[in-house]
Length: 534
Image (cartoon, rainbow, N blue to C red; front, side):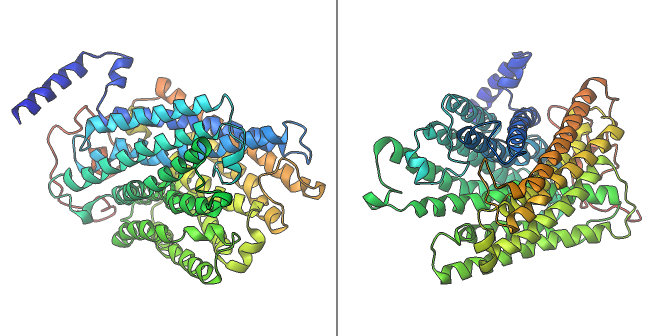
């Protein structure tokens, strides 16, 4: 033990000597690591967004007159891969999770600080491998489906290797958070006093730890097939291409909830603060996060209703798909009940939270159509799926990300942004998103297939409307980004607790000191006692 203590002191002294950028490279402070993740994932979000705008510009007309079909496939692959693996999955879980979890449970740091910074640099290693992959970018789509991904002459190996490396970052981060939440809670911080963002982060960490190895194994098998000729997915060698889909979606459907559960936790924190009411049904919201995590492992087969699975299996997966909606609906009901008769303040963070509820509800309800066997036969691989996926991922996860960014901005940076401009940006994002993706439901019902650079002329009016909406959405994101960056340099100094929140992270200065708390707090009540008489 003495040797370990000496080593710790030496390492702390080493860190204190580092200045400037080196203090960030070697940091073990969970807050700095959270900021590193925030900057990194935001960069990839903006790049993926620009690629999405290029794709929509190509789809303004029926012909491939802006980019070739091959280039369109490359853009589609990059847009999906960057958005899903490099932004949405680590976006809230890693950046806000790192910054907030120790603060919200009354700890000085995460359980394994060195492992924490190691996880970040593994993430960066994955991004560097992706940059190498751009020398001959893949055209498979972000799902890398076999048999095409096993045979295309584009460089599938590097991009899948990059995603494989990212998986280690996700696994180690999940492990760190689970141990932190179990072992580092302040005295009195019982499970039923935990903030709901912590419950969401805990459920997400379980998914990261258990599901991510499956996609890692899947991608290694694909790399082995391409480099060594092993026929895991080649029928001529006794393999099965549908096996890849089973492996991929066994991870990727839980991954949908790795993306969305942290956003649900964010909404559960924002709404009570700006409704000035205790959260309705605390335990139901908390346990529904774990329920979603559990059921998400059982529904992957609904992605393959048209792949030839048996009627019995399809029926079971359809039923389970409907079941997973129940814990999600519990959250939506409880958020709405919290708003009822609340003293609602329409802060920009609250606007994003309300936008989340509206848009995610549309995404969830349209998922019922895709979970129904007969309807899915018609809607599978159409623009209906594109619209549904974006209402869940962007209308849900990204709205939650933007809401979290505006809510905890003063805590992260100790500055205030321009609230009026933030509301204008929210309006453009909300309107632009709906103009972009709502028409795609109608395109899908009419049978327009997704993933093509060209389409029949009769669909041009709705496709053009969708493209115009993407410009409004892009303008909103641009204004929001500029406003938040300007706030860093010209914003007013933030008060310690500008919203009157009862959560522990708002009881320390903004930004928080290095070790968070001068003295570890003793928790005597939960964090949602708004409106109660003292």
